[in-house]
Length: 357
Image 1 (cartoon, one colour):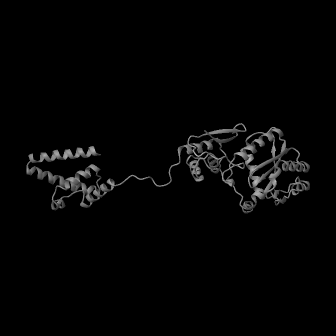
Image 2 (tube, helix red, strand yellow):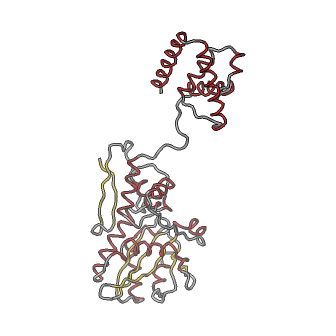
Image 3 (tube, one colour):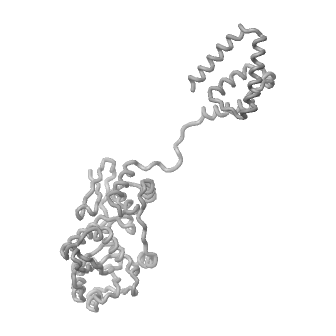
């Protein structure tokens, strides 16, 4: 732009120096011809486009003419136009660079990590990925994770929540233990029954037993085994939620009421009344059982034991501020030099991420 302005200025100076050699008659004729050409162009083009260099040359030459004579000329510009050009020039001169509005950009390391987790775990939604980031000490809002997935074309998983029991569970969560059954069909179409207990306050799961023939006596014995394993951990538990399955016999209730538990039976055909237990069954199926074939009872026990350990020790929970039931170790103050490593469980079916130096 500056080179063009210098070129036009030099060209006009040489043209000015050549004017004294010409006669007044030739110059008057040239002026008349140029005026007529301007009049013709103004009839055809109302708003001609001028470059920055053209504006500078016209403004400089206009200052050389007397004020009265300037009014008589048929110019493509007006005094108001020259003033507007000058105001725009002043504005550009005194405009300072400023930071773009809005929040700062998300770090590329977090972008790459979110997309890596989304690729490694197709069933994870933005809340699940945000939980893993929280465990790794990466600061990012859930909405930021959602936006990263949306920009990358990865749809977040649907959120599910039980509204009916929320107030009750929040007030009594630490005192509630839930029990439930679910079944698994093996590769040879043999049906196995899984009995588990889950603590509402900590979301810790206790895998009680697996059998092909679930009877009342077997369920009662599993309840005794659970109380022996928990020992003094049952002091704060006051309620047990269960459904109306006939396998929960009077002997089963007697074992639990002997330590002061109150049995609460859910309404018939109301799985949401035991929503936290049902939620764990759904998680176990989606993240583990629906993605592999079970050969037998021992195989199912090994798989569910491994998944339960992952669920209790690593998997984040929204109700626990994205912490696992067993809690997390304190993160170091400086994590800039830390690396993130992936640990595979169940042969790579489940991935865990940990911070290492």
